[in-house]
Amino acid sequence: MCAFVDAHTGAVPHDVNVSEIAAEFQASPLTHHLTPQSLLTFAQTLYHARPEAILVSVRGHQFGFERALSPLTAQLAQEATEKIVAWVKK
Image 1: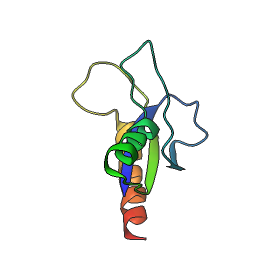
Image 2: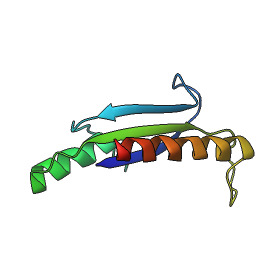
Image 3: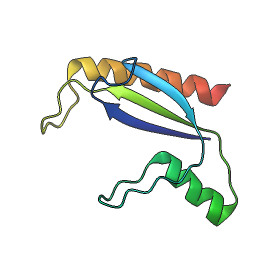
Image 4: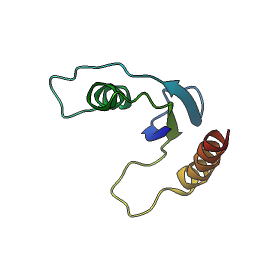
């Protein structure tokens, strides 16, 4: 099982969004960007592993240089943690 966590800026339908993902190579020629789907493709190719995986997107509210999450995002991070734990326990 793999749970990937990412921040989003509101383009995702919910403040905390959980979606199942699968291996799918996604080329990104102009950046150093590696998607969770591409990482799953590498695991499949190199190790013949196909783990269940989810992507948990958490709404970020302030993207400045801080040592802590904003209060609103910290609350959502707790909700995301609970969703991940529930998924692992299923």
